[in-house]
Length: 113
Length: 115
Image (cartoon, rainbow over all chains, first blue to last red; front, side, top):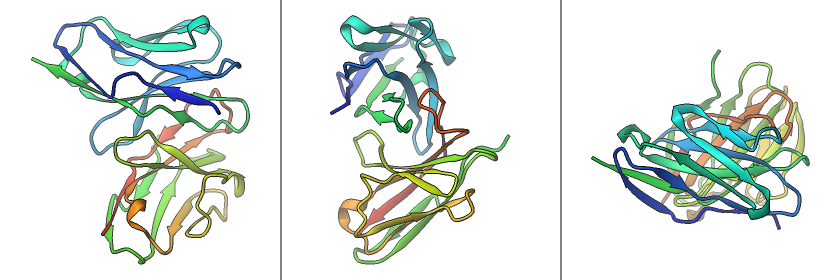
């Protein structure tokens, strides 16, 4: 079955430090890949997506992610964390059949001053 | 452009009661999704509509959950009777055509607590 694994349910970084959130998918067919962010009591907002163009994808708020087929990974990074980055982050995949999103379990990012 | 609208934002009911949620997608979007997000988990698809037809309802507990999108615009999700394990956030999303590469736009969700 197709699935998404996010390593680490909670990640804590200091303000100004590198942010690295890990995502791996299980599929022999490369999917479309997404990162969404969810702030408390809000819906999900797209950060970035990979749709088989450039493997390094830049998104909003200074985030980027690199698709690595050999590692079946799509890790999310940001060079310097800001307090406003504190939120829940979800990695998701979609395949050509229907377009539904399959989500990982989420990673809560905390940013310490 | 207005986003995806959902109501109510919060609902508290007792088990075995019924409840309904409403979603109005972005204007012109043909595809509408309902997801269930249990605390500490990622959202899980319940049902997908293309216009007023069902594309995927394989994970919808049909003995208690139902959904409709009669005119191909707004949609209603109903639970009857509710169980404790239905406590979750119910998210609605929409896309223009339902293609896998499209961005899904999410509403703010309805938070349901079943006591």
